[in-house]
Image 1: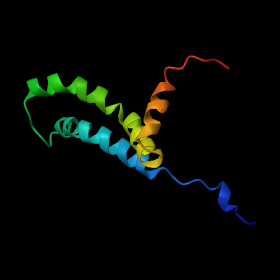
Image 2 (image 1 turned 90 degrees about the horizontal axis):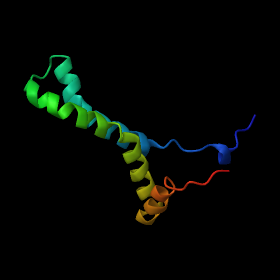
Image 3 (image 1 turned 120 degrees about the horizontal axis):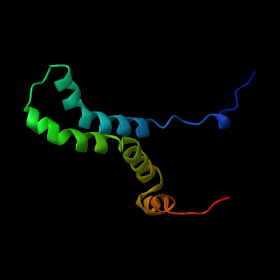
Image 4 (image 1 turned 60 degrees about the vertical axis):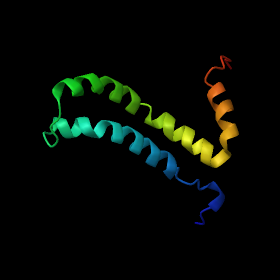
Length: 90
């Protein structure tokens, strides 16, 4: 059985790297504090926890934007973002 090389698609490594880096760099201080490895001000942690959770959840979006920018150029980002506002059915 011969594998057709045209049907094999590359793994989008840059997407996964940017996604995990974006999310986990924002969440890592809270994980370390929860495990007791890093001790920091409880008041500061309570203030920053919700913004960090929300911004960290945008990791896949940042990975997608970075991948589109590096693969297709900066001009491809605007049509990509406009496609989210398109309300066409069918």
